[in-house]
Length: 287
Image (cartoon, rainbow, N blue to C red; front, top):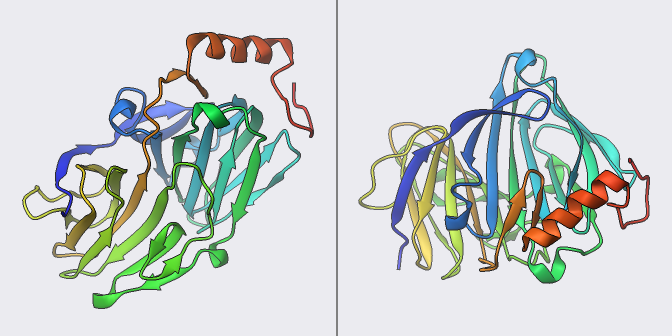
């Protein structure tokens, strides 16, 4: 059964970090309907004053953060000693687990354009205190699936047309795919029944089922259940992110950058951060 669209909403301007202007596709209020996903931010600007303040050192526990960059760069460092630059087309898949402290500082391209996305995915209770890990993928490591009708898909995580993404062995069984559909063409894709599934439109306008209204740039499209999706581009090229994953169906206790299952766990995390005992991993401690 092809999934039907249950809602189409526009991302909302907000400010995060030390003063980064971005568009939030969904966050705390919407997260209960998007389990296991918590937040999706779209940072897209040609004004350095709106992004260079960046995201100075801050903690995470209990989640994974996935950063995907289209234009510009993000310089990063973390308490495990990792440091480097996320460049155009790169992905940083960070599992905070028991706790990590990191910073992300954006830099625009030659035209001052910065454009990218950060997605937060929840970890189940059984793995919230796992050892943190970091996966950095360059643009060249992300395979491109070329499909009928000129459709192209950059497969970060999941499988499209027999092309499998490099991010694997993630507990929520996610898919994260950057899809481009030429004007007048269509794209169909199987999605596991019972998994949460949404699309976020980057460019163009598309029809995401046979009855919904068309969705344009900066629109979040949430699908109902089913075993696949069918998307068609309108009069222009359509580009969108497609994300799906297995719901955890667990209690969520969330405050700022830390997401646990109970208020007591959340209070303990912030107490440990204040007292300098937050980090459990071996590495460069930042407190």
